[in-house]
Image (cartoon, rainbow, N blue to C red; front, side):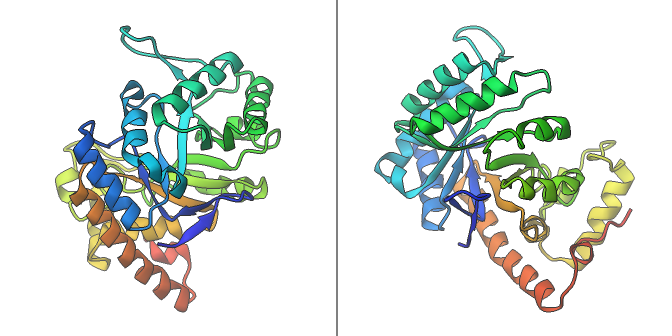
Length: 299
């Protein structure tokens, strides 16, 4: 599997990465998925302390075991919960970030995080305090790089110029192109985008007809527009999953696209689609076609 540099850092991520959010809480099942990912050349694993309230980090840490040094591990911070109390609340204070990091390190069974990400954020947050905390953690060797999971332009404009962040996680797909206008800005600040939502809740797969919900659109698409667009794409591509991956990976600012998997079969489908996406990209590169010609909106 090909790898891409994360911003101006020394980290090179596999173009497809494994997201922990969908990973089974059954250790044996989770281990099978992680093993398959590693065998396929996936080296970037993304989780968060919020996923299953820490259980996801524990499972990933136990499953990786001694193979920790072979992968690039990312987790997130900012959503605070109290054991035994329902729900969580936002806490991006320096003291909590430090406390949460040590808790994540313990659950993951490691002494450092490769990419530590703020799991959201608002313009009202103490950004000087947040950035200084990340920088201190980096100096202490507890994290290698840091970033943020956010699609808010005002937050990015406050965070990026004042920091050495290398990773911006954003929802982005052929059905949600809003982040495109910020790609050049992000790259200019020495960072890369890591995408989530690439297959748009399964709409950009070959099971798209089964995923359509009566009366529901997606993003800016009305229900009728969504059906028309997906049907139009399906007439041009025999694998919408491959198209979804190719669409994202055609962007040089994108370092990796995070794909979840709750079973080995799901991961196998993604890996097959990835191979086909390389063929799509090679064709368009050879014919010097643009990204707009890769994807035609049929609304």
